[in-house]
Amino acid sequence: MAILEAAPAPYLKPLPEVRPENKPFFDALKNHQFVVPRCDDCGDYNWVPYPACRSCLSENQTWTPVSGDATVYTFTVCHRGPGAFNAEVPYVIALGELAEQPRPCLVLGNLVGTAPEDVRVGMPITIAYQEIPGEDITMWRWVARG
Amino acid sequence: MGFPKRQAAIVGVYTTKQGKLPERTSFSLQLEAIRGALDDAGLTTADVDGLLPMSMTDHFPGTTAHQFWAEQLGERPLGLVEIGGASGQLAKAAAAIAAGLTDVAVLFFGRAGGRTGPGGTKAPEQGAAQTRAPRVPDDWSFATAGGYMTSWYAMWARRYMHEFSVTNEDLAEVAVFTRYHATLNPDSVMGRKGEITVEDVLASRYVCEPLHLLDCSIDNDGGYAVVIASAERARDCRKKPAWILGGAEAYYTDFYATINDPWFPNQGKAVRKATDRAFGLAGISRDEIDVAGLYDCFTITTIRDLEEMGFCKLGEGADYVKEGHLRLGGSMPTNTDGGLLSNSHCGDPSGMHTIEVVRQLRGECGARQVPGARIGVSLQQGWAVHGMASTLIMAAD
Image 1 (tube, helix red, strand yellow):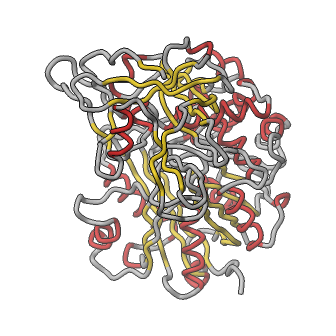
Image 2 (cartoon, chains in turn yellow, orange):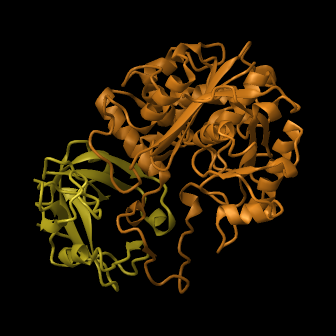
Image 3 (cartoon, helix red, strand yellow):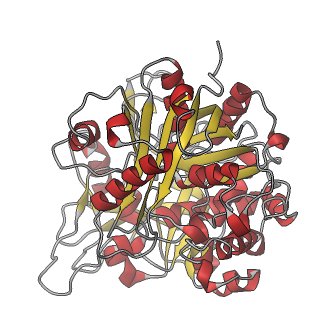
């Protein structure tokens, strides 16, 4: 499990709004677990979370910890950024395909700790956790694995 | 039963000045466009019985688009309101006209002062102005990772280039031919800057790798409108009608949060579904198209449009462009106004491609006219890559 240093303060980039429906996810992040709704009936993982399973429409889903291991499905190096992100260019956004299958889950996040020019499609990555100073939330990032 | 071919026609089109328009408001651009398109048709606001506002069309807070615009047009009951993407809205309006739900409908959009690119989000002021991180309501929004339109299309381009061995040079060819077209369009924003080369595209700065600045659409103010009318009304209008032969729309999830793997399935996604249905309803084949307007928010978009629409096979879009089919003089001149890359991207430009095709079918395009253009197609897409798509097939008499 990868735990990053807390982000520098003040943190001025957008953050998700924690609400009753997504609170289990953000509670798990605080405990350094990445959880994905898994269908109790057909077993498929569903990302991003939706009210029912995409495969069988069952509403019986359980927030289930995943390994966090993934590979880079695609990525971009941003040289312009909206708002506070513009002070951090170049930064990398990646879609990571989780190891858990059969329904592929592609999770969006910033890939940190690797020089942008070294990022490749297919590169092994894993979820890392980062505290946000002054905010009651932990965020996830992608980092290189192995 | 089938699609009511030639029972409705586009009878009026109008584009305001496109570019930086600091003295204008979005409402004034929309009103100018509505009046202009009706005048082009020889109609007045009293003739309007249906509204086709774009999903991003402004209205007062607390109103809906239909309330606001029905009131603005004189609080007359209107027979039809359809929101969506332009090609699909017009296809649905044609079907509604044939069914007798309405006679004359107007599609419109205008924007002043907004920006679609990363500059549209203000940087936080230094010091006291912003002390906390803003919260975004959609839990999984790409905004929390610094994402915006360009980054999403860049990830699409990266994956596509990876799977099909396509290069930055290949993408650049799209920017080159559309700029050439813009130089022949005196109203285009970029035409006056002259032609560009593949090297120019590669030498422009990256916005989001692999997309350079010249792989991206421009980001400007502007308005436009389209009037569609029944065959009976069309016969009395001022200009040659552009008859609706067929059209369809399709929606797909891809909404800037995640996508499903594979991103490029053989069976296609929304653009394929809308286009297959549109051609099927129109009863014509791809090779009958004389002129096309294909949504081109980025160079990658045009290449993917061609594949999804069935003008070439999956993975062959870049080669199809390089063969010259889309350039004026080619087998299917495309985005002859300069497209979103070099003519105008005014925020929600999904009707702009249809307008240029109508002008081609009328023979109004001067130096960029496609000789003898009789049948044209316009493709709208948006809301993430190919997330909402629609295809409209039109013909001159």
